[in-house]
Amino acid sequence: MKSIRIYYWLWLFAVVSLACSIVSCSDDTETAPVVTNIRIIAKDSSITGGKFAQEVAIQGRNLGSVREIWFNDVKAVLIPTYVTDDNILVKIPSEGPTEVTNTVTLVTQSGNRVTVDFETVLPPPLIWQLYNEYAKAGTENMVLGQYFFDVQKVLIGDQEVQILSKTSTAITFTMPESVGQDHVTVIAAGGTTVSAFRLNETVGNMVDFDIPATTWGSDVCWGDAERIDPANSDIAPVAGRYTRIRQVDLPATGYQGNWVISTCYFDFGLAPGAAADRTFRFEAYIGEPWKAGMYVILITLESGEAFRYEWKPWDVQGLRDSGIKTDGWMTFAVPVTAFRKYANEAYVTPEAYIEDVSKIRDLRVDFTNGATDAQKIPVHFVALDNFRMVNSRAVE
Image (cartoon, rainbow, N blue to C red; front, side, top):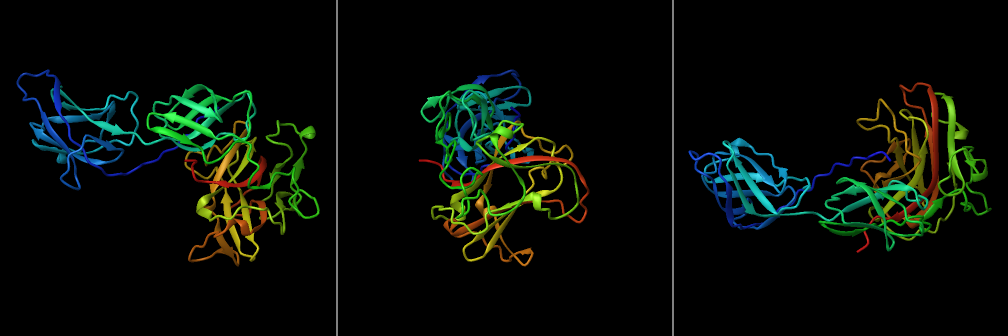
């Protein structure tokens, strides 16, 4: 399973007080630093612990020789102009420790070390998604997110899974032998978090090519993009029938009938909710490196208003040259706030978003290679399934 790196900064502010103890002294000619207090910069208030990215002032005596400051085993960025004999201004690193010691260590130019008690408050885990939210029992999968520090357990439903490897942004594990519509739980040093999404979700389903999305029983209303039955599939399906574009020498054009599927006018029965409370999710199998063209995903309301999102996951730093290729099926999650109102071939200004997802009446997914500088695409193999609207707020 390939690693997916997710980088995130959290800037918070709070207050601390500490007792100090000199751990070692390597130079008898240098006066050892003494820490008398740690306080928040914004106001005169002592603190004994602080959060990621919080700016604090370390106060004391003989601090001018300090060259390094470590929170647990994470080195902070020290700006020389913010270091004086009686005061050091520093920001708590936004990086989790390998080992939690709840200390701050000051290291002087000659190697003197002073350690004092100080708790770096770790944030609770943030679960973004599973690599594949429809993964089969016994297969390898991955939790993707942030703040996975000192992870103790991962649960699928109430079943503890075998953790194979972990970083602060990804936990690789083996799916349990019994999998239902379960939430994911991560228990780590910063707390316990339960995912907003469920595995194998059916609530909020829009198009999955197995359940009709028309009033006359068809999977979609129109569009000639291939739909593949599991019995005729040359890849393992993720969950029944799926659609795909598997072609060579795709022309530089904005439209082809076999690049589109649409439901026309259909009530998906979605629960009321604002865009900020929902995430649009689907699974994709990208079998060849993809680095040109895009899928235009268009959502239309019963009022006729249309909202557009351009899906091109290759168009990020590090993938534009090589392209993106998945390891089997992968779940993609798009905030519904990423769908912007679209009219007269342009995005509407000021920007407008979906106010109530229950009013959605059409989903259209259309591949296009129609950019002004587009070239023929030598090969394209992308399969799609399980378009759905799910809750985006974590379970309490």
